[in-house]
Image (cartoon, rainbow, N blue to C red):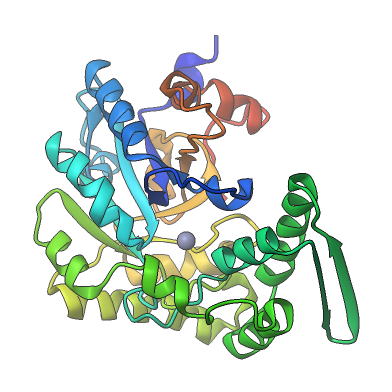
Length: 332
Ligand SMILES: [Zn+2]
């Protein structure tokens, strides 16, 4: 019986985008970060009908400090700062008075982020083959059918994500995508929240604005001073824009590859009340000693076949227990 053992005292859910399904071909890896507004609403209705307590991250912090939760809690978080959170998630969550957090990468509203994963998706979908040269090595992918496209997208995505800083990233993207996009910043203009929208959201007591670095680089790949700057500077910029303290943070990408002990120490020094990774697990009272690396449950409508019952298998601990080889409290 896994249920009581791996479900803990509650869960922090991780979303990215909330948008109506597009009537065009998509790559699974990119579209897996999107849920439909209908699915979000059905999930919220399910949680309310099944006696979960939908709470803010401030409340999660209080519980981890020792406050007794009345019932099993769920905290909703949205990473990166997509404008569709404002257009599609906010109306649903306001309707049911559900608190939620948006972790904003400040280069999104500053419009200096390159949403290269969407540029790459379009590029792979629109071409039958992809070839590029980087540091003397030629890479070649056939992209004639969807499975070849999925493979090419995944391979090139991982290749780009492992690169270090901004200047080579732009050069690398130009080398990979050549002139096949409307510009490196086209998706940012289309998809990122504006400062006006962030300020409006922050004025609603239901909404918590959290930090998610300035540039969304994999922090572990940066020198100490840059990693520290990415975290502290994003907190300062957000606080200046919204006129409130920013007490919560999540690591970009957030797996063991991009966030480890050094990043946890920096986040600790910043004094955040909670910090989340993308490690998968539920929250236990033992996490009071690890508020700088709280695991989450990723919400993936396509993984779950749009069925909320399948998401519940993660909340009740069944799937995290198996995934984590029956380790209960996921931290580092
Ligand atoms: Zn992110």
